[in-house]
Length: 315
Image (cartoon, rainbow, N blue to C red; front, side):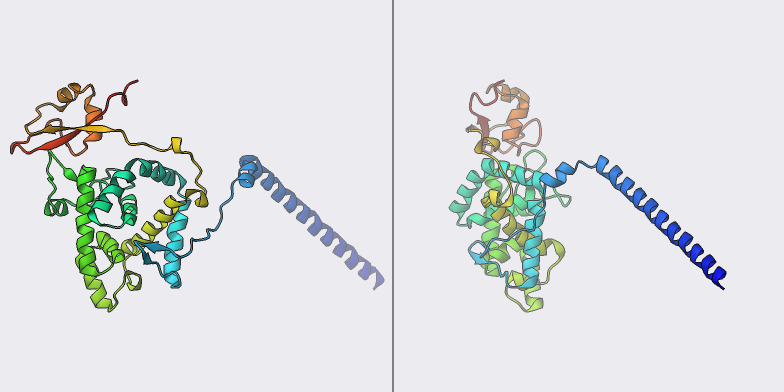
């Protein structure tokens, strides 16, 4: 019996030793894998770069209308847009740079048209302050559709497309927004209507028996629309609070121009531009509404062509 016990004890010791050796071997392999990963990853990046949860600004407003952050779904929607737009750093920097160049003109027109200054951020989320083209056919800083542009007095055809004329397009956007405000009652709903349409917003308000944007159940795009404007407003207003660091010299600046009045056709814009000491590219940059290499102007309409002042395009 004693012999059997000794044999069992010995087998047990061998089994435990095997487990220990196996465990050491596994740990060794895991450590080896960890070492291999650390060789591939620059750990100093992890030490020097950190991602933080955001503390949202208090008392958020849009066009002096309060954002109801006490509603859990609204808080989550707003938080999402702050996160997405804070940590999309390359896009954020482009917005700061372009805003410095284009906001002064947009702000001036908004003030003249009686539209709240906060609507300049609507242009930011619509186009990134660029002459963007949407899959649906919207064009320019304000992403105006062809039918809407014509309805509000813009010339839109293959030769001239004033949706690309920043001043004229901004005034059209203002007309639309004021009309939406009169119809829907608030600037927040007017902003939402810029995405979802005036009739669409009216139908939803009636169907859901509510009176405000923040009480509506909406599709993904329109649901995110106003929160995205609000987020960009505060990020662009307080860049350093959201980790963006730059100096005035890093931003884009507007190039002064003078207007040349034209009431006839231009047969060749490349040749025309040379009369002013510039080339085709530069003239088109400052007049993107000219869509072809010539200007038809069969009706002898008066156009103003912007020519950059001397000294800005010299090597």
